[in-house]
Length: 223
Picture 1 (cartoon, one colour):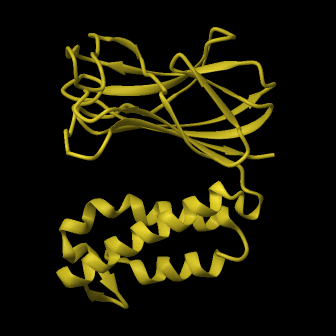
Picture 2 (cartoon, one colour):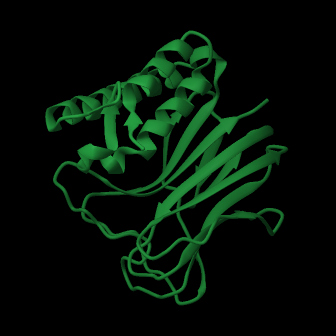
Picture 3 (cartoon, rainbow, N blue to C red):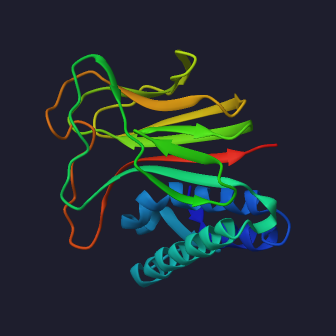
């Protein structure tokens, strides 16, 4: 089955004036298939396989669509309230050590778009204003074997949800719905089967001019 990116682009355009959430969901669908860019046979336009040059156009279009979407979110577009938190370090720094067969605390360091000041970040943890939220987390490990994420309510000393088990060196994900009264602090933990000193929670890319990003927490207010 081939992915028709034109159909997704049209869906995003149709939803643009109505609902930024639908537009974002459509864009996420396209992002999820970006790994196929190196395999032209997996992509099509109107049923015809794309050439390498056309794939470059797809990649550029996705980047521009993401930029436009982030700018609109930052401006509070269509009333959507959205925030992105990340574990982000300076170029050349690894993500930290993992321990054998235990939960490792991941550190939130950076707040990106936050259209309504939804989140406060302190000492690697985050607090949300009162309300109902959808929280999506993605994070990567390095040479740790099987692994999974969880969202932990530090204030209540309670595990809210655990993610699916993922295999070594793949991206771990977690989706959870959270209701908070505005006083609870939250933390993301990452269970790893194997310990790895220094870079178990992410191995640096060390590319000039780019910071290292090891985890993203995407938060959408639902009420």
